[in-house]
View 1: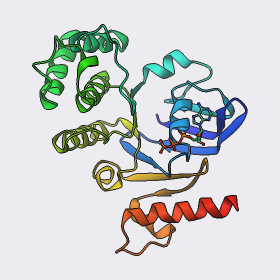
View 2 (view 1 turned 180 degrees about the vertical axis):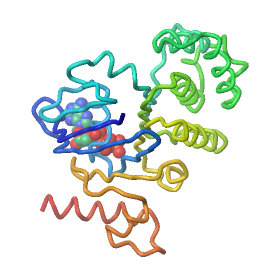
View 3 (view 1 turned 90 degrees about the vertical axis):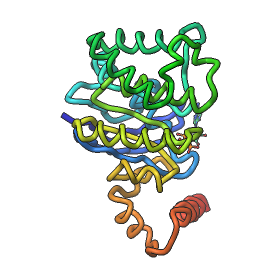
View 4 (view 1 turned 90 degrees about the horizontal axis):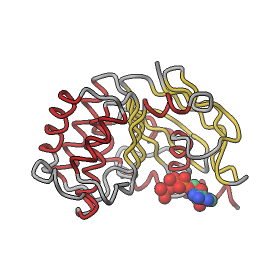
Length: 248
Ligand SMILES: Nc1ncnc2c1ncn2[C@@H]1O[C@H](COP(=O)(O)OP(=O)(O)OP(=O)(O)O)[C@@H](O)[C@H]1O
């Protein structure tokens, strides 16, 4: 039982943006995928969601191969995109029902959970509203609520902190911690390390499409020679210098 990305090379129409990426996430583990803009984080996620064709490598989740059995593979994943994806004609209630149907959830239990999640994100009075008309942060909350409702084995989260108010950030972090405690797997891309480290123990640094190092934030800071007093911004400055050097 695990997510295993092995030797993944891929990208867009012949351009290999990511090269030989190896990443394993065990049940009960949250991994943060970090790196500069353009490092290949979203591209890695797109491969994981089966939206791009791999040039090389394998991706398996709990022993199920993405290429050999994409439908079964995708049923084990819930995804929180950076930009909310909502159906313009569906109410919040209908979005929740769609998740219940898609993931084959028990309706009574799922509604109890859905109400709890909506209350947590102050959406409980908005069930009959169209989320397409919600504010940016509220739309993001809908994506969080629907994804956690799915109760999938693997949660893939692309930059969750943009647009969320501090209360929602705290609730989101609690949900990730709860998922990890329930032996779920979490892969989260983010630039907001100070907040991410509340929920994530292991980080993988993607640099120019390759995972350069993996470990706790303390280990990563040591890898790049950061001093304890250096801010997280310094890490990005060092990654930027490396990128510039590689392209000289
Ligand atoms: N649809 C596309 N077609 C061609 N190239 C693309 C496409 N999408 C992304 N790229 C390129 O792939 C590289 C990696 O982009 P990606 O979106 O994976 O980066 P990222 O690490 O997620 O960055 P950010 O932090 O800005 O979200 C970039 O050079 C980008 O220009």
